[in-house]
Length: 69
Image (tube, rainbow, N blue to C red; front, top):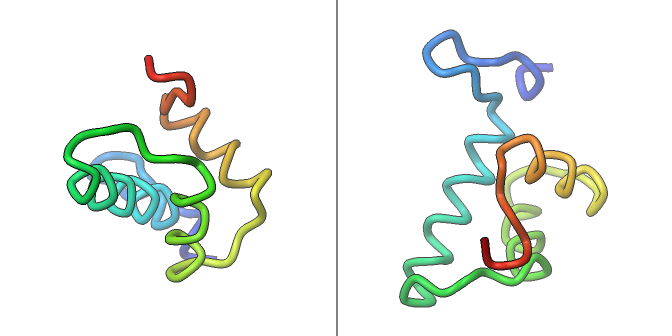
């Protein structure tokens, strides 16, 4: 339930915050290179249970582009 309630400070949900955290950590490990979605998905699953389709919805909502833009 708490995963779907936006934080009053910035409007991010717990799941969105986890995705951005994992994405940042993964990019640091890859020296700033793009993180493959499959890699991101596997790492996000360590924190929250969601489908691959749900991950793509969150990434679209967060403005994360999969084509290097």
